[in-house]
Amino acid sequence: MNDTICALATAPGGAIGIIRISGPQSLEILSHVFTKDLTQAKPNTIHYGHIVEYDAVSQHQIPLDDVLLSIFRAPHSYTGEDSVEISCHGSRYILNKVLDLLIANGCRMANPGEYTMRAYLNGKMDLSQAEAVADLIASDNKATHQMAMSQLRGHFSSELSKLREQLLELTSLLELELDFSDHEDLEFADRSKLLELTKTIDTHITRLADSFETGQALKQGIPVAIVGKTNVGKSTLINALLKEDRAIVSDIHGTTRDTIEETMDINGIQFRFIDTAGLRKTNDEVEQIGIERTIQKIKQARIVIWLLDQRPTWSEMDEMDELSKGKKCIYVHNKADLIDIHKFNPYILPLSMISAKNGNGISNLKQRIFEEAERAGLTTNANEIIVTNARHYDALCRAHSHLQRVIEGLQNQLSGDLLSEDLRLTLDTLAEITGGQITPNEVLGNIFKHFCVGK
Image 1 (cartoon, one colour):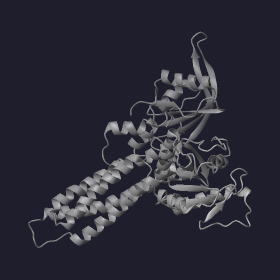
Image 2 (image 1 turned 180 degrees about the horizontal axis):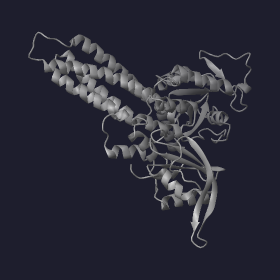
Image 3 (image 1 turned 180 degrees about the vertical axis):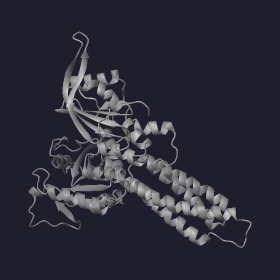
Image 4 (image 1 turned 60 degrees about the vertical axis):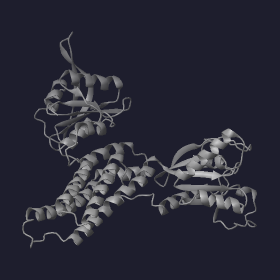
């Protein structure tokens, strides 16, 4: 924390490159390689000048590049330290040369995530907000961006803070009761009210933990399995959805023998479409393996598109119902270009009509997929708290386990000292998420090593 660090914050080769410096010697080190003395520079100011290098032959300073320096004084910076951002031209040569000059004058290269780690250690953000920075950088659609921004703004931390306040109140009442245990006529904690409050807190923690499955689906893409018999147009449909020839299309039955997965954005939500092997009875060992994988993908999917090209038999409908039990299902009749729509009988299934080959009905199908995701609770809004981090999920599950013991203890009239211990464990476990509990160095190292160097 006493070192002054530097790192490239943008990819080299662009029009502009940014180098970040942070640490107690930031302005002093820069003054050695800049045309002005910056040690007395005011905070929140921008300075124009040249980065210069000393030429031993001519014994003069030679300009390397025209730059703008943005000055931030502690504690009003991203890291909470004196910091400077150097905006220069994006040439790989220039950027490397500037970094070399900074290191030669006392900087060291930053480790991955070290800027954000310093921000956390200096109290600029809690640990869950720090982790949200990495999620924000990695976000590639509206949903993942919203979830990361919500966490970065402290919505998750605020929710946890409220839960911890309630838990502290419970713990305080029980420990006060223990302090005056000799006075049998005094009662500080109504056990029935304690039980009710504990159950309410546990409900909130369980709700947060349950949102992890949705969070993972939104980060990785909501899995949508395209299922049906052989040669109904599954591969043609995934190509139509993606607007590219991703899957092999053929009139030969059983062409698709393995699953193909691709993602696309619909209304700001990422969906992961899975083209599967056609369902049919076969003696082909390889095709049979593909069919088994199809069944596995149906189980993993949140939405199933059953693709048909003719009226299904009762046994086929029973099979569809059995395989897709508990899933959001969309029944789609493909090859609508080959039938007379006016004479078409939609049978007993609510069907969406498309022609994957001609692209007819694809836009309506995409909207239907999004609506089914909404009905399944797989979309998000800016104010909704959704857990996306496996570390947070693990801590919430452990907190729930501790609270379950508290609930059982209250129901069985256990003594306050045993209940207090489990409540303290719950508090410590929730504190792990935001970093309120002292976190081992190896845990912090594991969290921040996945960040890019400039963050």
